[in-house]
Amino acid sequence: MARKDDDATTAIQQEQWLLESVIPLTFNRLKSELENGLAVLSKHTRKADSLPLSSTQNEALKGFIALEGAYITKAELSIRLANERQIKTTITSSMPYFLEQIQQGANYLKLAAERMSFFMENNDEMQKKVTKRDTIELLEDLCQYVDRTELAFVYPNPADLFPYKICHPKHFMPPLRDDVVIEFCVHDVYLVCKIFSLDFRGGKSNSAAATAAAVNNPHNTDSPSCVTYKDKTAWIVDQCRTQTQSPMLTEIKACLRSIRSICQKYSQMLLQAES
Image (cartoon, rainbow, N blue to C red):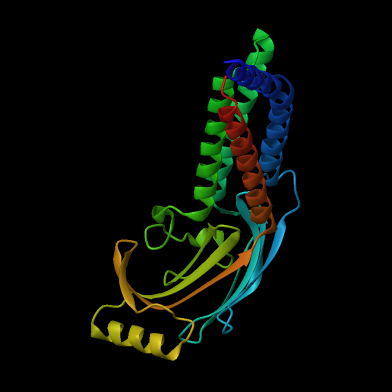
């Protein structure tokens, strides 16, 4: 009986120590990590990533891009397609290319920071002691926001990709022809660039041209396919995909892992401190 009483007393003391001495410091650390994550994703608080682009097995695509927050503010691309046409185009800061995934991830991270700040400010104003239940709920909420942020960076919305999303010529100088699509998306710590060459002409010659392009061009990794684009039938006669690692995306991934690790560690410690 005395042993059980001692164990219960120890558990209570451990919980009090965590809530009164450890958790407040942990909250400050989490608040700092969240603010740092938002700063990483802001184009106003860090230098732009200057990223090289080059297809690995051929010279289908060469160039570089500048990534600032959720925008590609500068790019120079040299593209050689299946029909031997060479295209040179640029993106300028006057018409930047918006990346919805990065903005979506930043929005989730902002919600996490607001949840953290509200919790801390509310407890300070009410002069309330932090409870075990409220702390665990907060840490679990932060983990959910982190998960949603990471998912935004890993899985682009299909509606934001070809052929569902229209490639607007206005983003490029000189403006692109209708039969060329350039798109960018995020995959984990990489910025991905995809190029599609299209043929809108009807008939069997279309299929033959697409098949020939696929056979003669090793960078065309997918089988020729027919899609609906701009409400018209189009054959993909050539395509290229390349990716480049972004220091900004690498840094935000490390930041998200740190936040999750902190939340899981102290949530588990509180759960183990049975009172």
